[in-house]
Image (cartoon, rainbow, N blue to C red):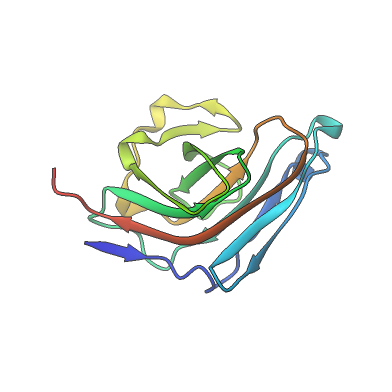
Length: 161
């Protein structure tokens, strides 16, 4: 059982370190393969992160994981879930490493850890699939320079355990 996200539907909002005075830049473009999240990570002015997020039309009720098909640049990214529509707040994060070829990466919801501005928030508890309203990608690997991540597919899935 799976629920696919239409990557080209609706906006992908960019949230960079500029909200704190940083200088990172990014954009999301729709491609023939899906979407491309790319830009330049800057550590200037206490910067160091770039992210994009997408509001979901439906919560992944009854699902217990998420699957990505990505092609990257060798950098470490985070897949992030949010359980509200706020700009700031707790996000559930799972790291992943990219390569230069297409790869499928699967996460169980149990792998996601709640964080707020990079700090653990264990009291937030585990991901509640019925409450997930946003999905996003963040780069914060402390390595300045250009980055690019192509995303061909994102879907929530259920495995019977």
